[in-house]
Image 1 (cartoon, rainbow, N blue to C red):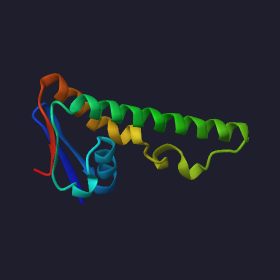
Image 2: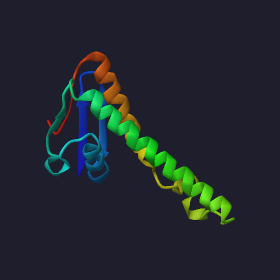
Image 3: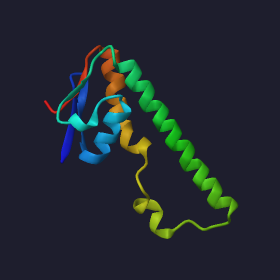
Length: 114
């Protein structure tokens, strides 16, 4: 399943269902009714702040994991490097965060499922 986020302020952002549902929850919306939704202009600052906080937390956790590997002198799994590395929240969320910030500047909402 694909979820398409839309705004008059920018190009569409298309995501697979599970990662999109997680981001919808981070925006403070009910992901169980992910078929349709909106982040109104008034809700954009809060949604942006929540998404930025989640990204910062994810980056801190990734850094802590890298430091723990370095301290334990454990070599990283070669299956988890380069193009095979897992995609982090910051990478998944960046296009949506950019859309939200652009929508806020232009004073338009962000919708999905319409």
